[in-house]
Amino acid sequence: MPKPLLKGLFFLLLSISGIGPAVSACDDEARPKVNWAKCDLTGKDLKNKDLSDAVMTGAILDEADLSGSILTNVDFNFASLKNTRFDGARMPNTRLLSVKAQGASFRDVVMDNSRLSRALLDNADFTGARADNTNFYDAELKSALFTAARLNKANFERSDVSQANFEQAILNESVFRHATLHGTRFNGADMKKARLEESDCRGADFSKTNLTKASFREAEIEESIFTGAILKDTTWSNYKRCRASSIGTCE
Image (cartoon, rainbow, N blue to C red):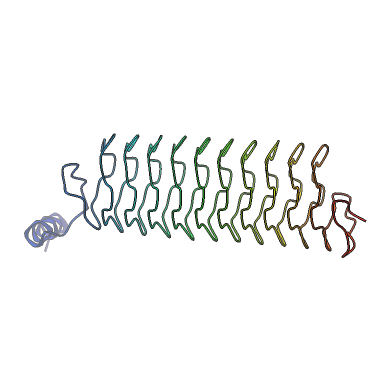
């Protein structure tokens, strides 16, 4: 059978069976696996919806409200999420690569194993969030709030978290290599085994932070504050290993 005829029969069978490339339908109701790619959903009320496995690549969701929704495995890559609310949402394994989410609220979300690399998140609020193993690589997080968040093994490598607030956060084995931490507050945080090598920590506040076995190798720590910080076996910027009894000063 000639190849053009075979190709025609193939697409005919696809049309009959309903199988084919997914096409976004912006008027579709909120449901699991909905395809809203590139749709303009500005200000849409999506509270307490089940949108698991949805496709929202490149969508505009500025000022939308997704509070309390189920967003497991959702693809938000390249979406606009400015001032969007996700408070209390469950969004593990969610993809938010290169999103524009300045001022977005992620208070008390569960977003373990999610990806926010190269996201714009200045002034975003992650207070009380649970984001273990989440990737913030090369993200913009200036003045973001992470108060009392759980961020074990989170990756902030090359991110800018200047003036951000991590007070009382749990950051065990978190990574801040080559990150910018100008004036960032970690007061009372738990940062055991955190990696801050070659980071710019000038003016950062680590008061009463648990930095047991953390590493500041080759980091810039001028004017950083370590009052009351636990520096047990911490690796200092000059490669010195602090004594187990070090509190506030690397001895």
